[in-house]
Amino acid sequence: MAVTLDGFRAVSRWSDGRVTLVVSGEIDYVTAPCLREALDACLARRPRRIDVDFRAVTFCDISGLNALLGARRKAHGAGARLHVVNVRESLVAMLFRRVQAEDLIAPGALRVDRLAD
Image (cartoon, rainbow, N blue to C red; front, side):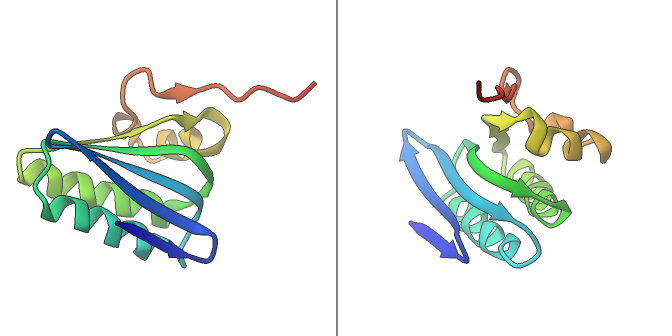
């Protein structure tokens, strides 16, 4: 399944009761509903674990974070775990810290951005 809008894209990849939702583009008030829709579609199939891959996310605001927090709450209620992986330090981690949601980031999933030479 793929959800796209305005440069945003979310594609789910399933394997053995787990799903990786690969997200790319900007997540803001316009595209956060698409993220929520993709997460709800994943949750409807009752996975044991959802990894939301932020490797190709170029921006995320509080709307995107709220979508993730809501999905985590639903996942927890269904007995599943949800984590964000491949989070770029400069992009999203600061937002997660400011609202004390760092526990959304999977252990070891924070990537330090490297400056181009």
